[in-house]
Image 1 (spheres, rainbow, N blue to C red):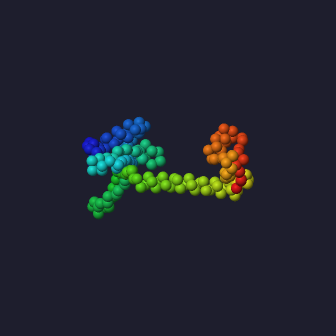
Image 2 (tube, helix red, strand yellow):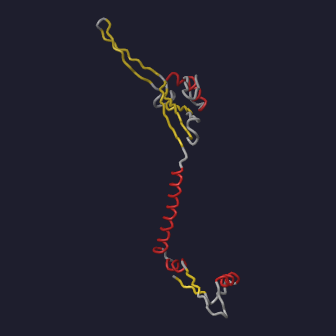
Image 3 (tube, rainbow, N blue to C red):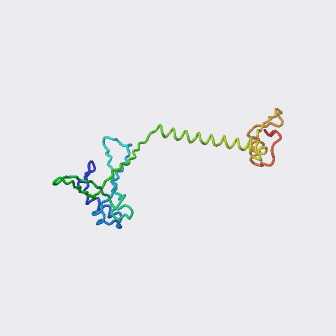
Length: 196
């Protein structure tokens, strides 16, 4: 058996021993006598982010028994062929039933490589879906919800500052903010709130 990763050569005995080590219920004697269907699965899992000339990617091999000689409904793999011949002007036919192992090769692969463009497309579409969800929620709350009037009243409040030009009582924004932060329940007269 040659296990070179570039071109492995597996012997039939090695494959059968691998199958038996995976599942000890596999009867190798029935498999030898009745034949069977064996899948050789080749899996490629490669990461192409590094320099592809320096890094090589090799497959891993798995063996699966699809149909064994101990199956009750259809045991093993067999093939019948007839051979016709004449002896002394009498026609004879010999029917031969051949048992054997049939191998099915399946190849599966996954190759990945980081792509900046795809990353930003994914981020952009995620942000777009978030904005879209916000718009849908806004439409539902403003149009369909039973508390839509209350939602409209409390969603936006506009505060207008009327600054006094009287020099005796100067009002600036810093004074209003300091007063509001110190005692939030007492708002200065210069702040008017109107609901929209």
